[in-house]
Length: 133
Image 1 (cartoon, one colour):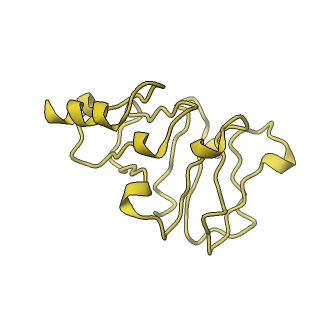
Image 2 (cartoon, rainbow, N blue to C red):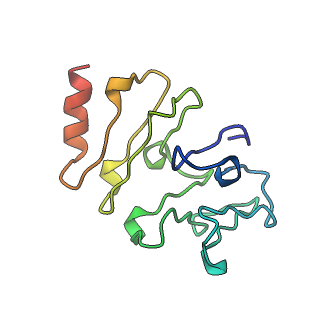
């Protein structure tokens, strides 16, 4: 992922609020999700990022809701964000999201393939949607 592959958490965020996920980032490249975040809430990304370098989008997220950005992750662990994705194609991640609820977004998906993951939805629900595509 390059610096140009910006991840937008909120369409109203300003340029300075964009999160850059980049293998070349150094400790000085702190990521601020919110200007009012406390020092302890800042996300530090080092070049050799490991599974322990979790990215917290929200202070209230539980352990199972953390998003891992890690070169060693397998295909099934990744959330793919294609840089052709439109602003309206946002990914909504609800509190109880589990590994089986992960969404894969690739350049073949259309607007109608967007998925809003809610508490009761499981992988089988996603497969049903895909089957009717």
